[in-house]
Length: 220
Image (cartoon, rainbow, N blue to C red; front, side, top):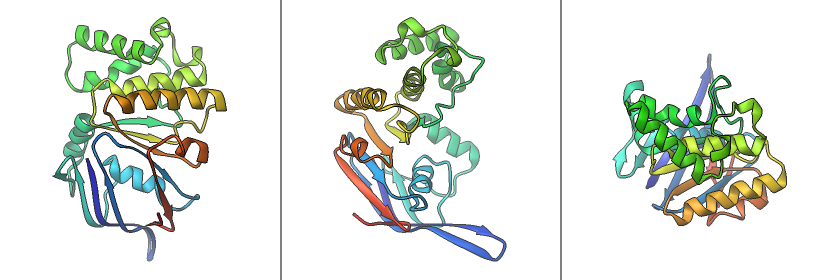
């Protein structure tokens, strides 16, 4: 599903350069459940942005589902993200003026899916995360755990091949975090490929494999 070969990434500010990713080699098999750990500044968020085609890399090669991802236009990058990748963020990133159902349906709107079909699919995926009864509530009427479940449903509604989660439990209490990981376990059993960035050891232990970054390099 994912293959990175000698990925390098630097950020430039004037004459200064910050080398964030250094010769990163990484393979994630289809259907695998993987966590990425590292201290602040280790490069894990940059790595996730490269995997999610949100940021370009400078050197190396990134293959997603056998396709080389390199030097894409913004339109091409958006098309790949919409076709292949679902995102779950720590801050939920829900639109405050739209209901849970409308938030989940939004990616389908950008795919040109008809209103009736996207409403039906959004309802199906809200039911899958146990939130059918909250479909017509706004985000500020939901708990943190419920908002994160809405964001998971939104990530899944386009049936992506890869689910990327950036500190998905960072804003949740322990019990709600474990409930979310139970949901990820269920998605994994269904065959989804999942990559979770986390700084929490107990969350990483719930995944099949942990990749550790230090100073922009894969340490283990």
